[in-house]
Length: 128
Image 1 (spheres, rainbow, N blue to C red):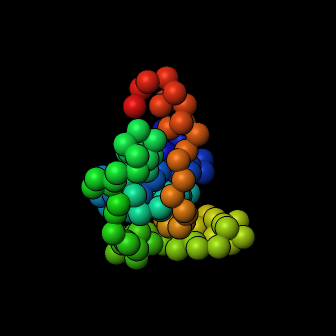
Image 2: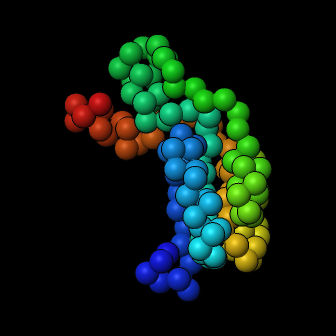
């Protein structure tokens, strides 16, 4: 975003990964980085780790479920635009609102927990 300030940037992260770097929202607001949209795939879990436990530990989950958290509300606290999306049919409209907000935006997209294909592939290769 800093290299090409006029370009639209979309960052997609899981809720756990986003929480690790949520303080970056302060930086985006302070530097006035517009046209920046964070899409949080929120399944209330450390998805990669939970998927590994599901596949290789007989669904014995240990410390992988995250509490319900409103990332959109938190984003607003930093001075960003924030919106929760619960209906897949609303993603396009929410994205348009975020794009037109005139400030950094966070879309907190609620999703179900499913084992991602990348995790299945990594497991089959013995990486997990």
